[in-house]
Picture 1 (cartoon, rainbow, N blue to C red):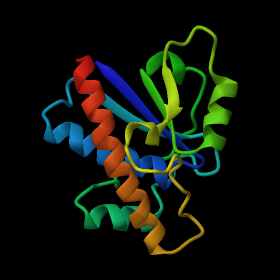
Picture 2: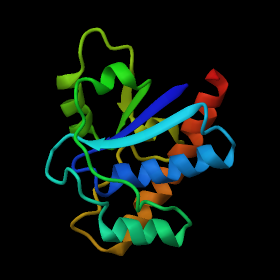
Picture 3: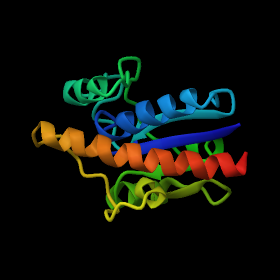
Amino acid sequence: MKRVLFVCLGNICRSPSADGVFSAMVAEQGLSHQIAVDSAGTAAYHVGNSPDKRSTAAAKKRGYDLSVLRARQAVEADFLEFDYILAMDHENLSNLQRIKPDNSNSHLGLFLDFTQINEDEVPDPYYGGDAGFEHVLDLVESASAGLLAHIKREL
């Protein structure tokens, strides 16, 4: 079993979008019994909340269901449970590096390292318009395909 954790700041926009898209791709390929997916935020602002309504609506238009997801905060124990911990941007990567225990073997990096798109961060769409949420999904779909291909080679 490979375990993947997607991480942004509040766990209501970017990381739940990645969770929903990647989970759907995993299920589509019949790999749900081999790949587990979760998401978290480095901050506790929204713990227990559903994803942002704009993220949910944009995802739904593309056939992804985020309705069952609830925000939680990333914790040190995640580094002992997950094989991949993927940050949406450099700030959250830095936040995660601060809590990563020395005995962790988790791959910690940027999510967009798994795509050929010429961007390295998934931008936070929270304070923008609908186009930002669509752009997040474009990036997440591309990186999810690359990540899934990478993990399939490991299985």
